Image (cartoon, rainbow, N blue to C red; front, side, top):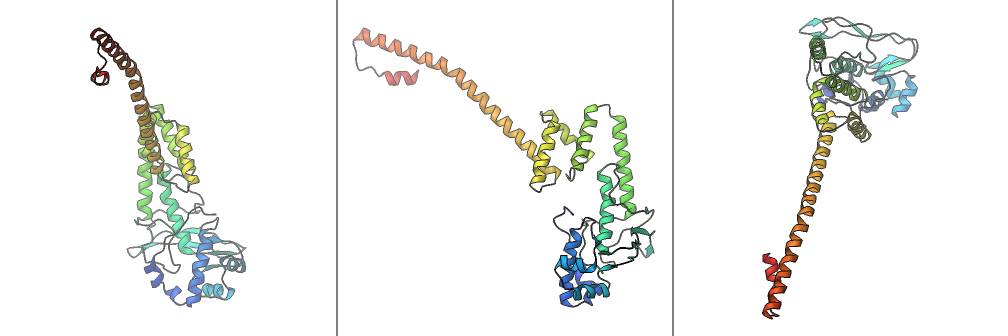
Length: 315
């Protein structure tokens, strides 16, 4: 099941979708429920159940599910599902075809927008893992395949990828290559075994689900290590965040730096308390000596009205 709590929704895409506009208002509402099921699917955007089971899981009538299939909004088949090929266009030119779903004998229902965006997201994710192979990678690698522009092929409603910025697959591939070369140069030129360990720690953080934990952020790990933070503490804090639903690397670092600041503050207060404790006995001895002097003067003068409290305060 997908561990992503939400998918992106573009109102303009939803309203300009010609295929979806042909559907009845009830069918459009049913499509949103089906999208939620596809979002939670183990294979993102794809459900390999019969249409009846998919409709039951989404809580929609079969009549509305069939309407979505007839209007080519929900794609797939209950038997002999055809392959799904992604062929993006850019600047009026078509890129190389990429097979995202192979033909299958069993049922296969999917939202093509979800499937395409998941493929693009996985390609972008390569750059954050320094050479890792993305999961569920299609069997054809693009060479000069531009990315889909916002508004193209709007037949599937909302998007599920993080697409605040839109890069072509060519741009993404080049960025990955540059990042991998930079990482290789860093590993080759660095004789600091500690740095290699910290890069490995960033990779381990990414493996357990922390976003933004790249080798580029190894310097933050270095800074924390210089202040006495161990790798075990970093991983324990990361798991603490994951248990609370927080996956960001900057939360891990800010939490650890905050705890370091608290520890330093407590150490400073403890040291100050020790200084006060060491200073107090000498002041007390001085006050006692002064009191003894006052008593002697009072005995010599035969006075009983000596302002001993004021004298002690002055002492």
